[in-house]
Length: 139
Image (cartoon, rainbow, N blue to C red; front, top):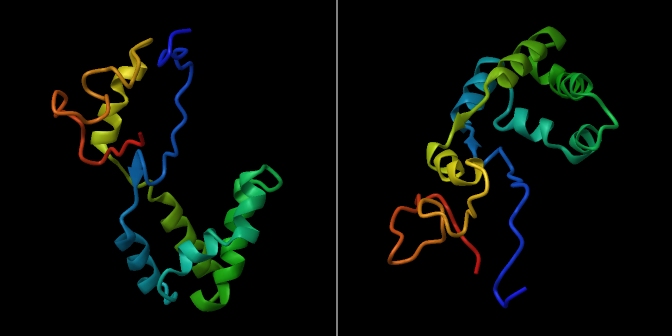
């Protein structure tokens, strides 16, 4: 293999949350206000490592994760029914797709185009001004 040459990628792995889709923190804040929860309570409870890790590695189900969030927030929300309502509303919000990132993935999805040489998704250069501003590259 020549210096600088590399095998063609067979897969592209992306973290969807915060990369391909983003979440408006105002949505959760609004839910928390309506249900009397402290600021950031939903996210703090959902992302607590003792709660999140088991569901991430398949030791707990998604439903069990949601139930544990409800149990954590029940007192602050005024009971389990109100906590369920808050968690269900929070969970129903799916975020917004970042169109610039989605568009930059079009080349790899076309089948066989190297994302680092594709004219719409190569690293920034004077000859390639079409890079979405949201993209960052490591050299």
